[in-house]
Amino acid sequence: MILSFDEKELHFICSMMQENTSLLIIIGSDGVIMKEFAPSYHEHPLLETNDLYLLLENKRDKIDIPTIQTVNKLEYFLCIHTNDLNGKNFSLLMGPCLIEKLTQKSFYHFIERSKVPHSLKEPLQAHLRSLPVFTKFQLSRFGQLFYYLLFRKCMDPSEILEEGNSSGKLSYFEDDVEFILSKKRAEEKLHHDNLSERKLHEWVKEGLTEEIIEFFASTSQLEGLGTVTKNNPIRNDKNLAITMVALASRAAMEGGLHSEIAYTVSDMFNQKIEDNPDFPSLLSFTREVYLEYAELVKKMKFHNYSKSVVSVQQYIYNHLYSKIELDTLAEHVHLHPNYLSRLFKQQVGITISEYILQEKVKEAKNWLSYSELSITEIANQLNFHDQSHFIKAFKRIQGITPKQFQLRKR
Image 1: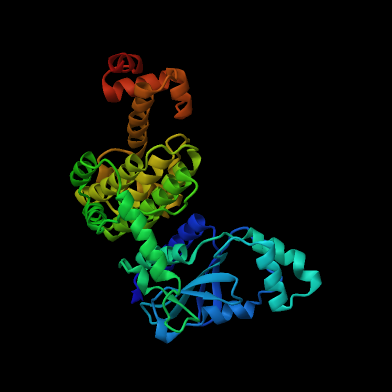
Image 2: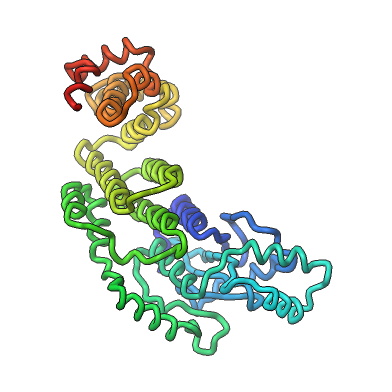
């Protein structure tokens, strides 16, 4: 298969995978390291750069197929070799990780087998203990997800390869999968056929918000997403939510949404995920994500706004709590301020300053309806000049004062 998107999107996918797995991810080409997405590891005192070059070599017999590899039978990597639209070779390397918890016995067995010098034992042990632990089955699941994000194709876990085995297939795999499936059957947690996922993708791509609303209204839980982090349910939901953001973002870009806007919204959602220590509902958050992206696509298709105007609208949406200057907006879209003002008024029908006021008033309505903040506090946080300015703007746009609106809602 061929990578059909640009370098920025590839970096976005790799960054998301790195953040969710805590594994180092390297992009290489013909054995040369081009980009690293690195976690905090203790430096490896033994692994040579040449070892990584060997893993990054594009192996023509294993093109596109995720492969589990090891350089020392202790640390494991996941590799995918592929090509871009221009036929250029790419290699994606994820790792290292351990496949079982490091014990004193396994560590000393390793250093004896590898003839590790005494002076390197302590730094090596510190490095190994800093690595995440994933089973080969979990690595294969990462391979499935990585493959899907890269190529938008589903693959069966049995297709994942392990280099060094005579069969090429994961040596543990048959028994382990059968056992996992048995447990899932007993718990009635078998994975779905991804029909819902495909539908959501198409609805976002076409900006079909009503279909998304109906889908989530009739859905009590998201089935078949699997488990990424076994012993931490909140972290598991957060990791799955970040994946949902990445998938919805990709669907919106396929629908024509400007990549800069899609990435900005993605950053906003991911920050929201990490800032919430409890993260109570994966279902409601996923609904919010898919609806937001579908609304943006719908708005773009309906109004046929230029990319510059849509980008300005999104910037305003993301900075409602700041003072927004015309020069800043113009710099954001690389246009002259006077030209941007004329373009915005021509397409949207109102001036940029009026649009900002309307969006701030919309945001204020949420605070008036659902929070205990005073009118002065709401005016301050939305960066109005003062309370009087806020009340006048609110009354002009809504027809009533903030206080009257507040009383109606309560």
